[in-house]
Image 1 (cartoon, rainbow, N blue to C red):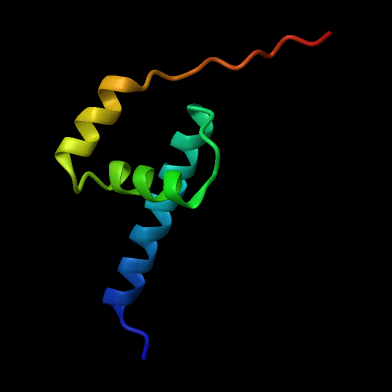
Image 2: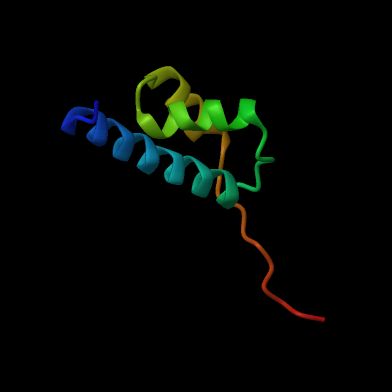
Length: 68
C-alpha cells in the first residue's frame, strides 16, 4: 500500500542520500558503506556529538582544475 507518509519518508531519505554523497565528494571520502552511513547520520542531524566531531575535523578540500 502506498501512502503519503511513505512517500514523504522516501523523499526525505533520497534528499539525505544526495546530501551525504555530495559531502563525501566535497571531502574526497571513499564511497564505502561505513563512510556513507556515518555521513548520512551527519547530514540528518540526528547525532549532535557526531556532527560536532565531524565539523571539528573536516574542512572542504579544494580540487585542482588545472590542466596539463
